[in-house]
Length: 317
Image 1 (cartoon, helix red, strand yellow):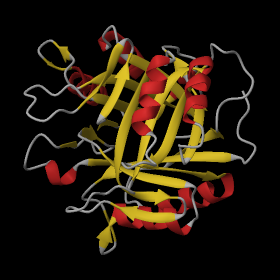
Image 2 (cartoon, helix red, strand yellow):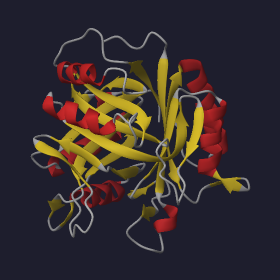
Image 3 (spheres, helix red, strand yellow):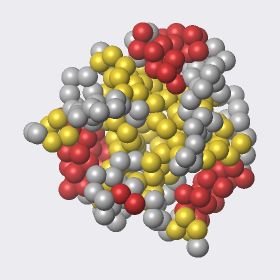
Image 4 (cartoon, helix red, strand yellow):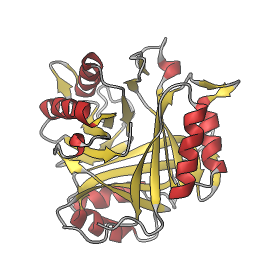
């Protein structure tokens, strides 16, 4: 497959809502850095459950901990700019290390139609220019394995810093749709979107395969499931995170989507007055290649019929 001719990189950085950089919140400092380095797009995502190197749990389920939710900053841009951003973020953060992966721009060129990729579709949350609901629908009809819409609470889009406000429509704030599927399905769905999406990037991943976890560097293992999926009477995503923590994983974060699908489960999302939430969830953990192989086995053992498990190499942890 062809990587983007523009030499794109994607940065991901996991940290906590209470983390500070001097006298200001770390999330503000990170998003300021994204805007200053001229990234193509960036989004700050608020997780619902997770832990980091200290093994301390962060969750939105308990009032005492809900003000320290896990956060994930995602940014994509030219290689030189993302490398400089990663260096600055590493200097800002008291703990944690940003990771970068090669990203193609647009749709994959070359390779086998059966090769699996993860696509990130960038655009505003809502309004006529938002590509997200249309992207999920197109991915589902063309046979992708999953697609999940994640709402940013801060970010950069089209060179402009955009933050969510407590009392506002937040139409222009960045959101991302993350889809996984074979190149043939992704390409067909992308053709329907045309120029609606502000930016589309892709990364090669392995579907339920261990080659990515054999790397001497690092790997990211991802489980795509639903908040309503159960395992021995408890939410499956919580069971996965707690097994990772007991096993000594370097960290894990669960991100709650607002709309999406996985497998043959039709697109669905959050509904008012629903007693049992059935929204898409993405749980990811980043670790050394050898250790990530153990976390991949746990994910595969827990995953339900419609859940999706994938992994990918990263240069370093």
